[in-house]
Structure formats: structure tokens, C-alpha cells
Image 1 (tube, rainbow, N blue to C red):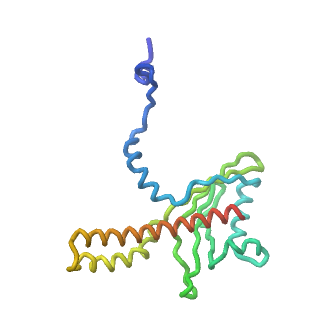
Image 2 (cartoon, rainbow, N blue to C red):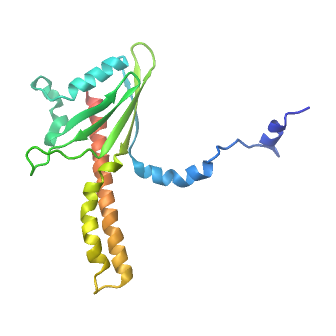
Image 3 (cartoon, rainbow, N blue to C red):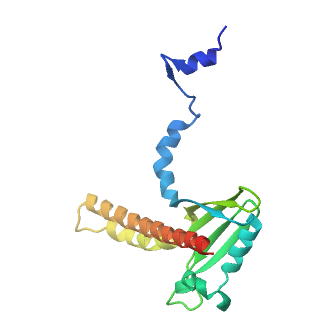
Length: 195
């Protein structure tokens, strides 16, 4: 007797692999998930255990005159904040100083997730991914929300032009938020590489 699952897997000499349950849905959602991640995945190798890596990063995140070789990391008042850290990994965000407000800082636009994988006693692999912080987008959407009634109820243009203008201002607001998140993610990866 032969195994029926093996017969179903091989048809006409071609091996068919079992696909996951929601593979079609994942294929359609892949472009939307690409909007969520703002930096390509990065893998770093460090010759230290995870606890030492995290300790060095937390120490380097604080500006000091003893670490002047890191001065380029703190340009424009940039600061790095660790949300949580453990032996498995850490999460961090970055903020910058707002030039026209003395004590205010920009809200974080990206979150960097890093996972530690211990290769051996002295070598650690850090896998880094960065994604958008969606809940801080409200600050970028205030202006499109204010201009939407002006564009939708303008009497001098056709309705198609009005709708396209409205969609364009929302698209530009989204793109500005996404690109500022990409810059923040790039700066955080640069910080990890230099520290």
C-alpha cells in the first residue's frame, strides 16, 4: 500500500508543496505590508554577549563629553530612547529637537525592533527591522483634514478635480510621514552600527 498524501503531493512527476491556509490573502496583502516596514532588514554580528551589547547601546544613547566620537549621532538634537530591552532583544525610537520650540521634541515616527541570536559565547547576531508608528500620524493629517472642505466644496472646478486634489493632499501627508519614519529608522540603524 502507498501513502495517499504522498500520491497527492506528486502528480505527473511534479512535486506540489502544501500551501499555507491563507497564502492568497498574504500575497494580496504583501504590498500593504511593505508600506508598514520602512527600512530593509539588517543583520549585524557583534563579538559580545547580548547583555554587553545592550549595555553598550544604552550607554552610547546618552550624550557625553567622554564620547565625542559619537557627536554625529546626536546632530540636530537627536536622542535615542529604549522602550524595552531583554536577553531576547530590544525596541527603540528616536526623537529630534524642534527648532522653533525650545523644549519640545518631535514624536517618534518609527520603531526599531532588534532580536538577539547567540551564535556562540563571544558572537551575537542582531536582526534589526524597522516599522512605522501608525498612532503618531495624527499630527501630519491635521492639515489635510482642514483643507478637505475647501477642496471638496470649491465651485470653480469639476468634481473629479476636487476629489483628486483631496486624495493628493492625503497622499502627500502619508508620504511625508513615511519618509520621515524611513530617515528615523536609518538613523537608528546607523546608531547601532557605530555604537
